[in-house]
Image (tube, rainbow, N blue to C red):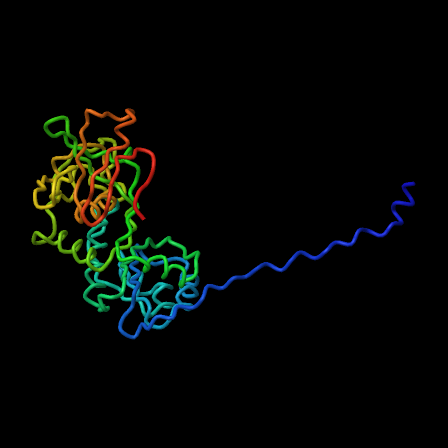
Length: 310
């Protein structure tokens, strides 16, 4: 019986079906009047994966994008692979960039240069896209373009409220929270200009003030300054308060563990800091349902578990 089975022909296997390849339709816009997307890279000495970025932008229509690069070590970037393969990149003048303490200043430098170096009709939905040097493009340019330009509003990813750790206690059981968000955002031209203007409001940028931070951070590690950070003034976003009635407080008033300025600046400078009645303490179901209407952003909820925004 075994010998008989060995003599049988093996079953014929059907070849696997060909993978279904769907190419996104090409962009049909006219980019002769200006680009829609401005990619702004924050780097130390070069942008890795330059070959992948070259392939990504090779699929983009001519004139549909601009590239901007800030490097902590400018000479290294000038000699790097990214500038070699993407010579259309604008390398902006280097400004101080300190990990966590202040990566906002180089972000603003990129925005300022991109705003001054580009013009696009108001009818178009431009986006100024902040990118880390370690970012990889995983979708085609046409899909990225449609996703970012099908709406005029800026894109900010707000962290769950459990991560809003810098606070200040006000009267009547009210607490103001500094909203934490991803440092990598996509701003409209209007918001990008407002962000730059707010950061540059004082000569030389915002003044530096000491705030309460965790003691264990090594002051020499990554150039951190554990007791010093840029301070700016915040509009208080309180339910039922109109924009012209908003009070302002200094960031120096807030207390909590160390956070990174680039994960706070965009939302707080563009919109402000929400105020909630803390008689509804965390853990009480009603507390997670509190929300405030933020001009230019929409509803912001005190949701301790879920991210918000786009």
